[in-house]
Amino acid sequence: MDAIKFCPAGDCALIAEFGNRIDEDINSKVHALARWISERKIPGVIETVPTFRSLMVIYDPWRISYRRLTGILKKCSFESRDTQNTQKEIIEVPCWYSGPDMDDMEKLTGLSREEIISIHSGTDYKIYMMGFLPGFVYLGGLDKRIHAPRLSTPRTRIEPGSVGIGGSQTGVYPVASPGGWRILGYTPLKFYDPEKENPILCRAGQYIRFVPISREEYERAVTR
Image (cartoon, rainbow, N blue to C red; front, side, top):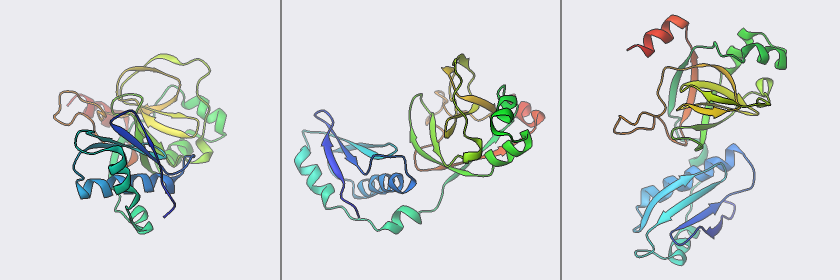
């Protein structure tokens, strides 16, 4: 395994860096290290936070020092198969493809609406990391044929459940928010629900599969 670069992040966290680009193999190593840490239940380690290319490890400095923790992590070992053969956890996300930017997407891509829907719903998207908003998923694997630039003027409000594309990524807005991604459709699933014991629907390392549904199916789901 390639060497991991460690650096401090304040007085109670460290960063383990695997590279400097968005890459599925690098991200898989990030999650493999997070699993390695979780399985060993290292005393003093509180939480791990995966990103595209690095892992933040939050710890209690009264129980374990930065030097001690980095020493443990430098000895970690996991085979490459651990990053590739882990069984996918797939969350199916129903989507009514009726967003306000579908017409523009047809013009930008040269594809028909049906082709855009087929391409967008034909991939299992890995959740590289969470961020921006509670429950917001940064997904990897968007087909280059439907990459699209962000809006030149962001909208002041995008509704919860809006499914969009921004550049080379796709995602779901979990709460109402300003935003510049192009909206393809809407899902009735709540990616963030503060009323639930576990308010966040998914976590980094899982996969999302968009499933096209009709307007009637969408309306039935949101009125339940």
